[in-house]
Length: 171
Image (cartoon, rainbow, N blue to C red; front, side):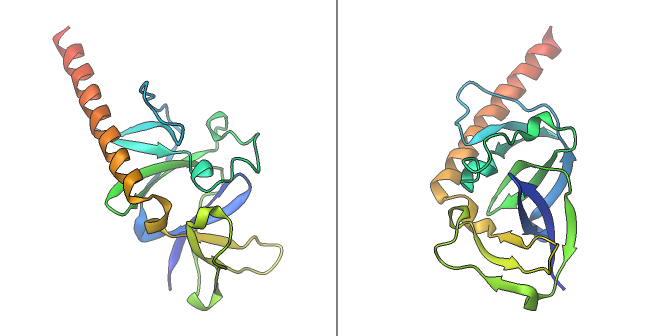
């Protein structure tokens, strides 16, 4: 039976299959280098690896629907670290991060012109009052060019971080 990690962003219930998830962390301070593009919140230093933290609400085009949503100000927010293709990325999610086991027959194919910037293919239909869960397609969340750029930015931030630590050790 498949399992998904479910979470909310801007009031929309989303999920990603658990084999793509590395870990879930409490919200921590992020590194914000000067050239951080608007699609990034910053970088998470995860045991020496600089993991880009996406503004997933922007990638999915949800930010326009809920302009007041600011997970960085909520203690209950969680950082979800996942593998998208060959890149580890993270994003902030609202409280209520849960594991969901579902039967494949519960899923329904999304129409081609659905919302969420075409980053999902299927939805786990659930009876009311439960919210249905849109399953993200990890291969569709980032374009190849975006993945390359994020890897470059993460490598640059790792060099900056290592140089800073070296300077602190020498001081």
